[in-house]
Length: 239
Image 1 (cartoon, rainbow, N blue to C red):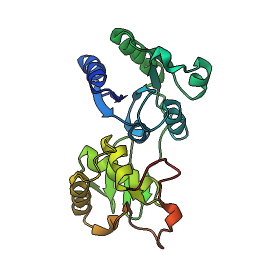
Image 2 (cartoon, rainbow, N blue to C red; image 1 turned 135 degrees about the horizontal axis):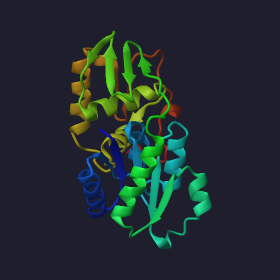
Image 3 (spheres, helix red, strand yellow; image 1 turned 90 degrees about the horizontal axis):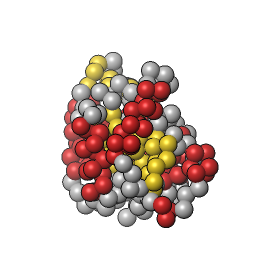
Image 4 (tube, rainbow, N blue to C red; image 1 turned 30 degrees about the horizontal axis):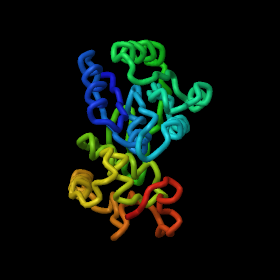
């Protein structure tokens, strides 16, 4: 099933857009921050991106996506946003609509773009970390050559950490990237999912906890230096 990622800060608008695509038979994934959208875009067939997300400039989100993915992106913005069309398209947008836009037009644009792009998407190599091999496009995990079934959020969590084995990820960054909820710092959701991944993989060291900071993938030599922590470079606080 074709997967549409809807990145929108306004819950009411997000619900309207998601419902329009769901009625056409698309699978929907939601994000409420630019950080989450940049991460989840890897597993989507098309992204509908509001350019006024709370944490990152929408065009910067698109630039980040374009460094690693060819997923089509439709940007939306209010007329007063003052976004230059040339700059928008140079950032990697495939289409740009002003809000409020017709949902019928939005869906039709998406369908037209998908007709052109599906079937010629580039092959993304699997992510490997020790005995773990993650096939992001097929959303499959193999450990020592055997398949391991994860839930969607468990898969996204493990793929995020394994894609950058040199990085130590703050809890806040992970919540934003995987759950689209940068504010849920005290939630037990993350700890529960980390524990579940460790159990299913059969090795507690697959995800290592750095007390007071966050998590990183296991299966690497040496300890992380403080400069390895994504905070300043990603614009995300560690608190």
